[in-house]
Image (tube, rainbow, N blue to C red):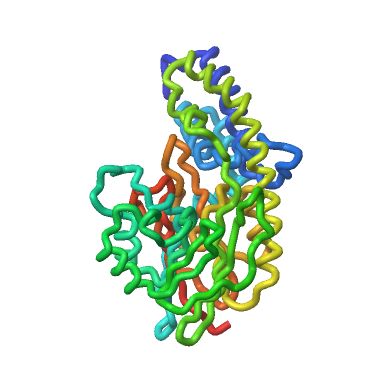
Length: 368
């Protein structure tokens, strides 16, 4: 048997307790979306952390395997087996697909563009977000946090760059009263399906994109955010010692927890309205955007229902994240679809102008 000096009885006891707690939390996180946030908040919070709890669980299983503690190794494996379904949603085991010969394919981008501000390079002399859109190759671009297409929103975009954007995407749609906009290479109009409003904000809008031989309905989403201040978002990144950890935990239990509770509840309401909108549509449909929540969450599962499919899950291998600041590395932007469509590929773009990465999905129209 392998002998590890540090593995004394006290250390093993601590590791046993830690392992049981971590595996229990992993299972709770995997099924956290089954708990209505109207009544319980902690499961929804844990749901966000599932990929990290899975990674920690695997490390603990390997520890017990190396030290040849069969019982705890088996216990860890059983814990992972108990949540394999939810885990494969956040850590899928698929790859991209080739299009059917002769099929009509298209690319669609979904991006919370943060008013095209450039967080990474504020001194940049040009608008890198607009450049990225033009160079993306997407046929349809769905944007959140863009109030209009004026120079005040497309800051630092030269007249020549804006003209290039207009030439590439001559069709645009979106209400001036919302921050949801669509650019398209093909004719696009609002579909007349939107939510009744949430604290003065409309959380989604639907559009009809008329391809040469097909019409695609696209629902662009921007569900309720967490409403955390910049200082509150720094809670995780400021943990550098026991003292700062205690301070962060205290702040989390105070104002932050209250805001999280409110956010999960508001998103549940948004998701219910969005699901009604989905049910009112027919034909090929893509629903994408900033869900502010992860796969397996209550809001996500409500929107997916029993008929929507997740393009990222069906075409990717392993976990990813679409929010990138403050160490909140969560996959909170989604692209769902149903109808006569097939997901071929899903790319998480790595441009760092916004606090979100863009999603670029490739689809084909099918005959069924």
